[in-house]
Length: 138
Image (cartoon, rainbow, N blue to C red; front, side):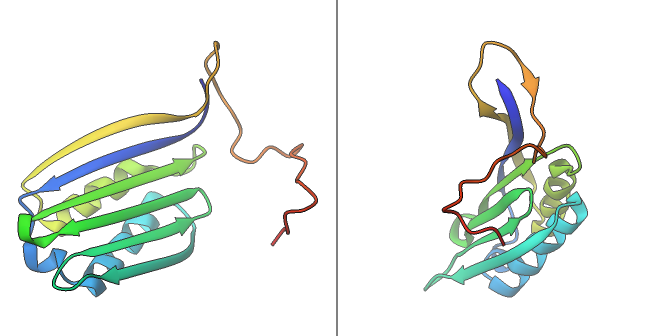
């Protein structure tokens, strides 16, 4: 694989259900987790479901981090997808585990990238990248 990033998939169980239902708390936590990982926040969107549960995503310069909560099960699913070597998604994972008061958790890690016969780590944003002229550059 020509590796472009890491994708941590976290299962947080036996959490504090009240915290999982609080959209402001969840948004603050995930944004702080992003900062602790060393990533750069671009934007975030969070939504509280009726009667309960929260979903949210923080778009970062290095990809994204997202959360979906089920307060009725004291459970949260969190993705930490980062590109490049400057971000440590494990710091975000440890912070979220502590803040959600998860007593039981499981973490899976996947390399993300271009399928290839040879293993290699690609630069996150190579200087020689030629952008499609139809895509506006911000």
